[in-house]
Image 1 (tube, rainbow, N blue to C red):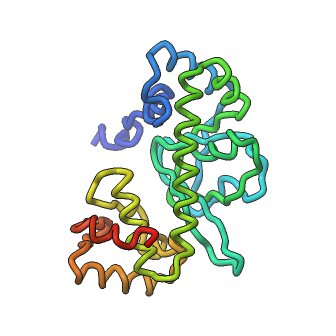
Image 2 (image 1 turned 45 degrees about the vertical axis):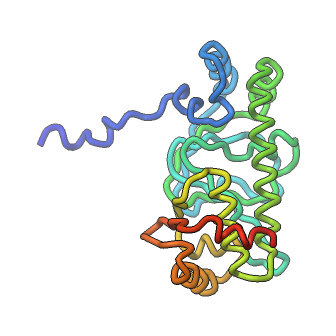
Image 3 (image 1 turned 135 degrees about the vertical axis):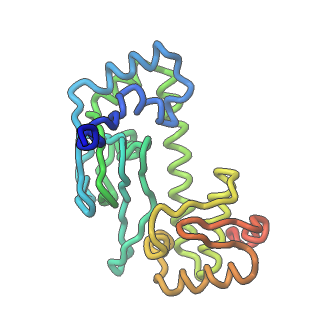
Length: 239
């Protein structure tokens, strides 16, 4: 059949403008600001393609680029003192990898690895700095975004160090509800990776999720966790 081989070829790649519009920190920019931002950011940029489990950046590496995710997913990995992996952040389509470190001018403190096939736009850090110098509204939006992400990181660190498995899971799910106001938590990864996000074993995480489901606080369907009683989860929040 003549048309079938071109199925994937016909899939339109995301334009640079479309990619920028997906960024939270570009939502309030006027068309002329977005046009100027595009010209600045994508100067000497390039496409980075990763296979599953391929590394994007290593811990301790100097941040030379921020990466805008066109497709796929990247996870940030940190390690406990005993060498166990903790996954604090996942970056999917329309998110920026490495922004916190670039803004703070500090070396990368996480390892970033592709969860699945991923395509990213690599933006030189000097381009970001130029954009923040020339576009005040963009700068305000980026700093607001970075401050919120920094707060999320602090919250996750606190949650992952709580003693009870129940408190970790309930606090995590409630904070996600508080942030999104949605009673459905989409897990774009396995229960094992959710466990690593909270510094738990897979068995402990699965067991506690089952208990919460029996109690009617949540229900689970494939990769979705439905928050049936958010206020019930709240009782564990930093309590």
